[in-house]
Each structure stands twice: as C-alpha cells, then as structure tokens.
Amino acid sequence: MITTIFESETEIGKCRCDSEDGERWRFAEPDYATIFAHTAATVNGHRGMLRIEQHCYLRRGGELPDQPWIKPEVLLEPTLGSRETLIEMAEQLHTRFISRVREEFPEQYMV
Image (cartoon, rainbow, N blue to C red; front, side, top):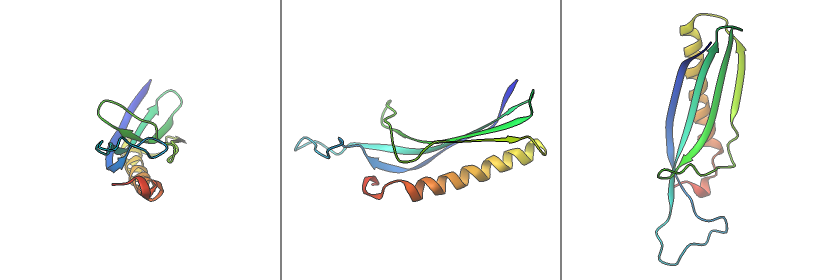
C-alpha cells in the first residue's frame, strides 16, 4: 500500500513562452506561463521505502508546456524514523528544490 505523506506545489514566477525562434506576430501580446516546483513524497508500507519525486513545470492556462532546463528528481530512501521525520525531510528537500529551480531557470525567459 502506497501512502502520500507530503505534497507541495510552489509558484516560482513567470516566464515568456514565445516560439523557439523568438518571433511573434508584430502586434501580438507576449505569452507568459507560470513556473511551478512540485514535490510529492510517498511511503510504501510493504517495503518500507520513502519515494520523493520533484519536478518543475510550466502552466499556461489549461496547458502544461514542456520546459527542458530543470530535470526531474526521484529519491528513494529506506523509511528510517517517524512519519513526522519523513515529512520534515520532504519539506526540506522541497525548499532546496525551489532554490535550485530559481538558480537554474534561464534568466532570459524570466519576467
């Protein structure tokens, strides 16, 4: 049985979503997407493993356009300690991931 013990989504900022060649229609408004960092932590009770998944994604309206800069991370650890300790660890890793996204996201696309 897999149990979710932590899930958090943090808005990082806004970025431009222009075409790859940087060209837009002459009078078109710039297109923006919101940058999010997401962390989910689950515990597998059968094996006693903690799985923490982190990814950065863009949201533009109802779309989720790809972003190639921040690679997703998956961490597997044995569940040592209490549930509160595991949640605290997931919160700390989410905070670090937010910092990583802010550092590594290309500045030329940030608004």
